[in-house]
Image (cartoon, rainbow, N blue to C red):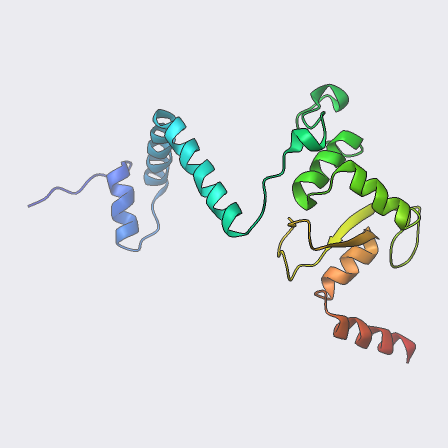
Amino acid sequence: MRSVAPCGTYAAHNRHVRNGEKPCDPCRTAANTYQREKRAKNREAHNARDRAAYRRRRDAAGLKPVQYRDLMPNAIHAGRCGTYNYTRGCPGCADVRRARMYRLDPHEWQAMVAAQGGGCAICGRTDKSLHVDHDHRCCPGDKSCGKCVRKLLCGNCNRGIGLFGDSPELMEAAAAYLRS
């Protein structure tokens, strides 16, 4: 007869999962430790596999790689705001974030702001910060391919459109309701 692995081991964790049970805390800890050690031993292989998977997904979506350093020489700008993370209010951080999320370089951003007179494309307010609006039918989620960027909106207008699910019919129904 086969012996059963005691709880607190990776084998016991796998047994829980196979039997459709929720693994106990010692088994979860053992599985996490095992996976962490396995990844540390094979870090280069894991990273190469992750990079290859990213390239396959990117190529399947028809996106070209954005060369952030070409867009902005200070894409990694630790000296500017004192951190490698995004810092609210730092212009360099905002440029890097817009490049990564919407594929907009700083020159395109400035051109959009100038074309809109520095205000929201819907309400025209200039006292609010501007947000990039993109078509979620093209790119669901937060990131954009860059082709579906529409205009710049204030936070209230951008959230309003999002809450209406980007549906013109719902927006028109809401406008009719307000007029009545």
